[in-house]
Amino acid sequence: MVQKLDFLKETPSQTAGPYVHIGTNPNWVEITGVWNEDLGLVLVGPETMGERIIVKGRIFDGAGDVLRDALVEIWQADAEGLYNSPSETRGKADPNFVGWGRQPCDGTTGEYRFETIKPGRVPYKDGRMMAPHITVWIVARGINIGLHTRLYFADEEAANAECPVLAQIARKVRIPTLMASRGEENGLPTYTFDIHLQGEKETVFFDI
Amino acid sequence: MTDNGQYFQRDRTWHPPAFTPSYKTSVLRSPQQPLISLENTLSEMTGPVFGHSKIGPLDNDLIRNYAQTGEAIGQRMIVYGRVLDENARPVPGALVEFWQANAGGRYRHKKETYLAAIDPNFGGCGRMITDEEGRYWFRTIKPGAYPWPNGVNDWRPAHIHFSIFGHAFAQRLITQCYFEGDPMIWQDPIAMTVPDKVAVEQLIAALDRQNTLPMDSLAYKFDIVLRGRRSTMFENRMEGN
Ligand SMILES: [Fe+3]
Image (cartoon, rainbow over all chains, first blue to last red; front, side, top):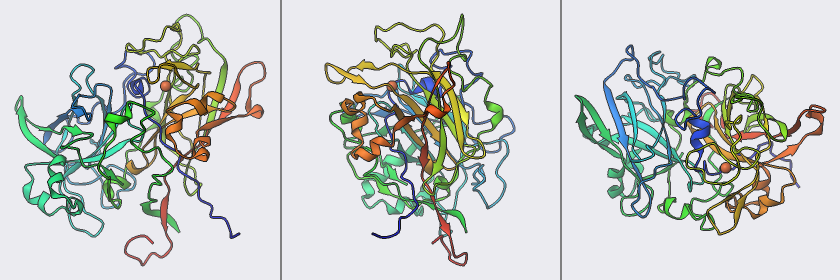
């Protein structure tokens, strides 16, 4: 025998199940009067700095069917590339931008949608700059542990080409699965980020 | 010595794998390519702060927070515990959200089709932000077991779903809490997605007779462990230790 290390084990994950929204978006599933508003619906206010964008997309399973019961969370830096978090030591982030969002996929179309701002660039641990990106986390029935990926902006070609995280993806043909394509809606830039859980176009997921 | 390095690598053998055919929905919803291992960057080591101002006084009382004509029906109980990290340190300020079926095993959801009765006084959701010692607690009724479409006769054991948001996106976790002594846990295709028996036991809340309220409520203790961070024992190193 040797001395015991004092670490605990992380609690094992379990699927969020089909009714995750009861806990995360009760008003959205018509459980009203319990709390005023569901958390994470609104990211941007009139004072928030940065370029307004819309991020949207759908999630597809291995048969090509759209998930209509998933929950999507995003986390991102402000327009200057600072996170609104106590762990951010490089400066003070925009106080009018929390950077965290949470949306259910639409029960009919399966689309998720966030109105947010374009994030600035954040350094990698060695100081090289990562390309602008949004962290995306999805849970749903049938997903045993939350899936973690990143949305990158397809029109940021130069920044994407030098991003140290994208550079770690050995199979370059998979990099386009992380690229949101730019369009326009009501005069706002719109980025579409579809997520594929399996198949030819399977999205790159990260073990972070 | 402070914990400000990267988060410990997740032990993927402790968690359920993505592909678990006995839980049929996972078959088409499990990535097949290997995950890309990524050392934590600021994007994963940061996370939002949830203010206590967002939380209402009844948010952790499921017996009363949806009451219309009276209190929720069922076995009254208190569920409490601490949110810790793998270094056994408390995680204060964590957002803990929970949802569950009513005493008959029925959820309040338009897609729910189980024939058990709806309880007009039970919504089934609650939340809390952990205190300085990482503690959370709530009052509820014991959820019922329920059948679900998987095998022709599969039943979920009584359980409460938990979502936990600690200090960093790397710690984000959703799980389920089961109850001591329930034989149905070991027949449940979802609990059994967790490969290790000891890991399943980490999901089972202990009956705590010391914290019951006499003539009122039972008590169950359910501690939750989020990922821990490496400490920087030698500050002159560039990157943690
Ligand atoms: Fe459930």
